[in-house]
Length: 368
Ligand SMILES: *Cc1c(COP(=O)(O)O)cnc(C)c1O
Image 1 (cartoon, rainbow, N blue to C red):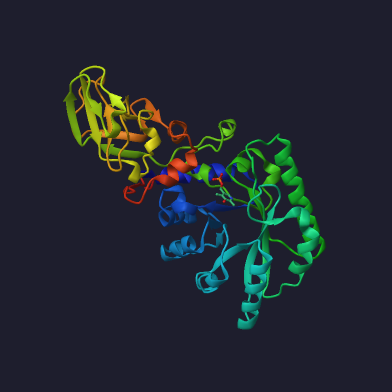
Image 2 (cartoon, helix red, strand yellow):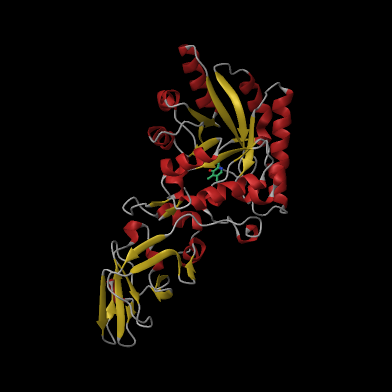
């Protein structure tokens, strides 16, 4: 269940953290962190999101097919063979490879038209980007571009939640030096951006002219230390129903490999959800779900399509009853962070793992 009112609320919290002149690029890559890309983007577009960020050109095209009109930035790179897709769909690529820049420059020159792009600089993430430290070697080549129009510059933090950390500061300083050099060469740079959710929440000097929140839009804090910086509401909850309820004797093995054996007569509920839905196999004998507002532990190995939970201690459980995998029920909550700890991962991976087999239901109670 996707709560669109919570999404709108979280977008407002982004706005509250930034100066009025700063624009917002909402990151909706990976199917909007599992929430449904064009559905989420359309709502945020109505709320005034200035742009969207996707990882790939394919994701950008999906947003266009879904009716999104706002500028779309392709964050994680493009190949020269995708030029037609970019042009036809008005997608703005992030570029960081001189070889590809030269090839796109030549091709756009041949067509007699131009292509806006944002430049990615690596200030210490150690991932994509032209290395800030090597600016003397790449800046002259950038100055020669004509058909490619440098419209923005960006970088990415390695540890943005650690505002006081020296490394974050060094990345910020390095980015500022690159901006100065580009400006001194006459580049106007309408879009300057560095802030992910953690930096939106905790690091105003990194806001520049545009911010790039992802996770916080979905109502999740990027790190525990950012939790008192805004009040966010989780957008997604994940529910299922009990498929079979079975009273079993003491000493019975549950699921593949018999990794759980009942220590008493037990009431075991089977749920129609498994690792193929994105309910991680690492939750086997680790996770818990909510039934009637109580926690029921996952018992035995999570299967591809089915998972068993022990509801022996919960009174009155019925077959067909609602079960919350992620979200709140009664006074209890299973958060994405908690599930991530069980599955030895991070909330980002919990959300983006929920597979396409799981129907997304959009709840717009807040809309009049
Ligand atoms: C995913 C991503 C973001 C959003 O990060 P959050 O931590 O989810 O806010 C921002 N910028 C880039 C380049 C990204 O890839």
